[in-house]
Length: 171
Image 1 (cartoon, rainbow, N blue to C red):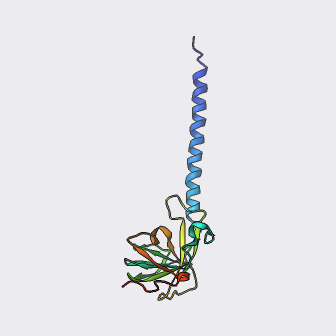
Image 2 (cartoon, rainbow, N blue to C red):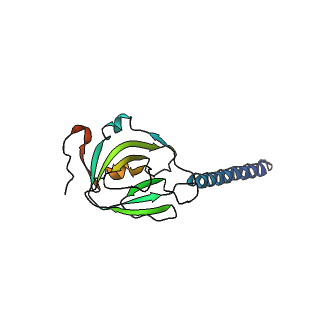
Image 3 (cartoon, rainbow, N blue to C red):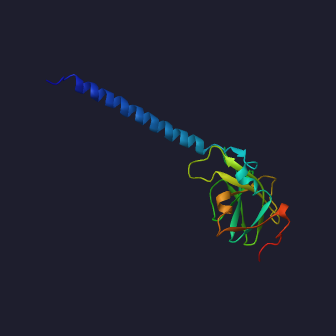
């Protein structure tokens, strides 16, 4: 003989379980929304062994790329907080300026930094670079995602300043 009081108890437990799952979903959505409005935080990775050989190296762009003056969160103001280099055009209220970097432009790596609170799938390692002919409006970092810089169809390593060889940029 089955216990008829067991079914209401199972239904009650299922309702609590569904409520907990819903609360976790709401929390995840709110956390994602909150984090999307927060500034990324970085740690210096220049001293890490896998990046040491990149310091002071120079890369020549093989394709046209764009450098954007970006206003950083919170809020969108009128001050550039970073210059970001990307192979495609970007748009949005945080983009305050845009210039084209032509093929042959040379980027010199000054440092490497890792994001400690980036979204999954976003680039987490950036090179801090200097561009000889680019004159930024403000003294803020110029960055490029390391995966973009090391893409064989976008840029090519031409030398390391400390090695003293190959100081000419390709035509």
